[in-house]
Length: 188
View 1 (cartoon, helix red, strand yellow):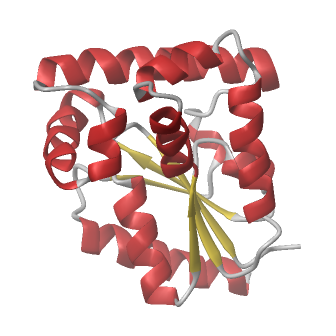
View 2: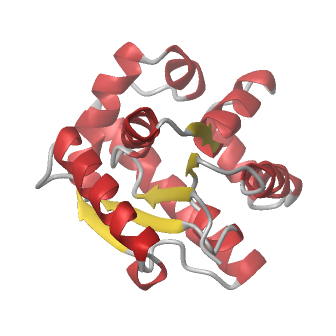
């Protein structure tokens, strides 16, 4: 049974949050971000996002808390969820993967740090090279944790209904592609 839920996963800096915000606005849906939840947890603990990610490698409760929040969001209807694992926890959702190589995402993240207070507080990076190193480390950490915990590769594009290259499509194009594909998916 299909749910009126769109889950958006993807590479670090691929535009998950911006895309989810805009898709939710266009469709009149609610919104949940596990990334914001994790960033706030890092800030509350006086850590950076990377430090919390490293802690999560030995402290499963970090991921378990996030997963619990995602599953709760999955009980809602008419919601857009951006989360690395929402596609797994909410299999009856319309599952999207936003693809962007880390070499490109580092500059997007640097620009976002200037505009986003929560991201700035949870990610202490000043240069593109520092950001590249941190996102590479974070991706490795996530892949390791999710493989160990769930035997899951969250970057395997076969897990998704729709894969979009956000380097070749701007935000408006990505939103339009998702909304159109989602409506067709609902009709199937």
